[in-house]
Length: 462
Figure 1 (tube, helix red, strand yellow):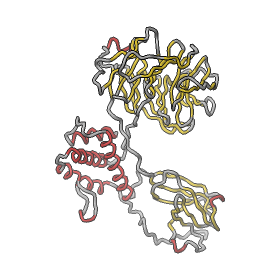
Figure 2 (figure 1 turned 90 degrees about the horizontal axis):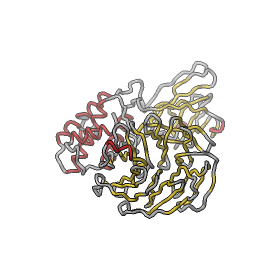
Figure 3 (figure 1 turned 60 degrees about the vertical axis):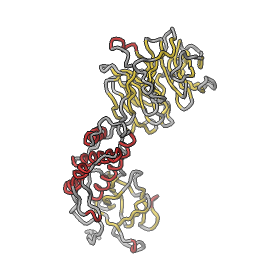
Figure 4 (figure 1 turned 180 degrees about the horizontal axis):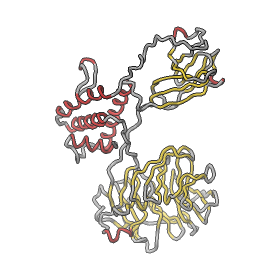
């Protein structure tokens, strides 16, 4: 179930479906607090659903003594589940037990381990590889904020006249180009989305609208122009920033203009000074993410470094929040790409039915929907999918959120708490309610004790 569905369920249980007293931060903090609690309970039960496994080759560089090694653990290591070793003669995998600290200097042929800060401290002979099963830390649960809608006064037959959508967090304002020659705004906080203001009637075609730190930038006749704006007062008073007349596209990131001029990628300061030429590439949609510059060329998303590395195909637009990329593909899908250098770490579809996007701003992306015919500023947060197979986990999350919401508004939550119950804890006695159901649902490890092991395994060839 998606995190947003859990929030909706919780609001319904609390009878606060439309309450604005419960804000996004309230939802986010409660979601993550209860998920961390559940994560801890799942780990305590020795459940294997959320474990990860890594095989670590033991190398001479890890040696810290005779038959003694420090093997680095994965960066996302949180808690150890099991350790096995592959001995170097037969190649068999054999369970490895924790050695007693008092035996740390004993000479032994039977391998053992202990945790040593971020390393696995190993002792024993003929250890070729170590297989570690471990629990990662609880992931941060995210869910999208509510969509913001703009241009509500534009009738369906004229919706196609809207281009270049822009979002500004100041008073939750939407800005767009209407009929190719008018820069128009409407603010939710000011109640002007249905009665928009024309900031500038240019009189000639303009495109590539960008809002950045109190300025509106746009492309006109191959020139980058900008005008200071309070997003209310008309008309704008623009000035040329790059006046070559051959600019085909531009973006703004970290106080820098990235643009393509005459088939060459260039950068400049926001006022157009300090121009630096880059590669001779007729790029569009330049975007900076994690220190790597990306661009779109002939439907392909590529990186500048490493040179012209293909990242994705079928791409019509690309924007960035400085860390991740947001691409619009030719299937009308808005996708979030988490990148590590020029590699994609994750690829998530945020929205479908999209035919145009604008620059990311304040955790939102302005979009124009196709069949829906809406101008929206949608959240850039991924909707986390809680996939744990026991439905009781989703119920606990929803009921706990409902209790938290009731608590904030000062309403009685006793009926919700009766259903939720409490986990097994001290003087409260055994678990009750949904927590009791979780305890009986999660499979317990009965294979062997976790903390004490008196087995003296006999290895045949010793």
